[in-house]
Image (tube, rainbow, N blue to C red; front, side, top):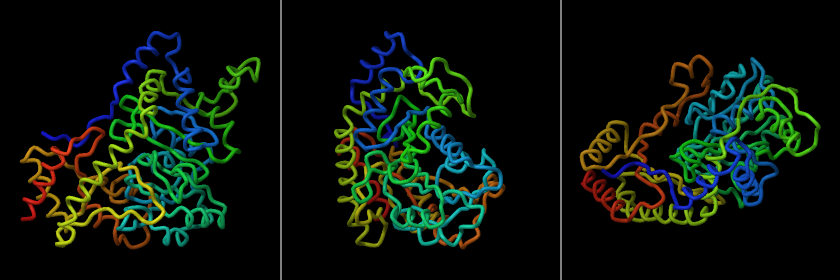
Length: 376
């Protein structure tokens, strides 16, 4: 069986985890946690980077930081993971779903402004497959209407928009280090990037159960106390140690994934020329990170048949999100007023192929051969 995913591992993670185990610091913000955060601040670069237990936690922090209140509205695509919406629904917000662009599966930036009302507080662009949304347009809209922009860059580490790292363009950015992502902190993990200085100090407080504990450990206050709302949003030092091993090899991982992505792209293009499938489009100015390789079939029936064909040949390929606005909770907590022109129809055509750090060309060729066999 060729699996869909294998969590990335470069070999040094075990060494660093053992170091952390032998230390006297296993809870959050230990030496490895500080190293990781400094790496992000230097390499993205970012004004402030804070590790979290998950991207879900990072999004929930963002919702608190912009003070979402019941009745507020937040604009985002329906084609995303449930956490993108849940983080704001938990604060009482109504989600306004906007249709996607079929070329990138990202939010259609030309439809956003028409959905803005006096209750709109934020726009949450989701960089699908590590390919950037049209951020210049989105930031201009946000500026005109005095809205916050929270980038859901869960899949976007080491991706860029006009030379600027995803997650560093909006007021805040969030990332995932789940085992299916390009870099992992041992199964789960996340990161929030603070790009607006107004939120930097409060982000530390919310992350530390609503206390100024971080300032206390830096010697800025003589005791720490409860001063705001918050929760426990610190990952363990073991997670940070695992992640540090991967960050040391971040470029190596990125280059390997891009090479595997290009192998698929080159080999499958004859099927594009024959009109059998469509492949992902990378707009000018976007530098992606090969987070995933997907193709699109003609329709849902063909996709179902292709997935079954691959499964019978020992290949685990998968489809992705069921649009949130079609789910029970999506109907309860959100609305999709405009025509669903592409969100559902495009999502029903999408097939994700096996791709991970270390996949060999022999395995990829087996996948490719099976796809050609299907269409022949």
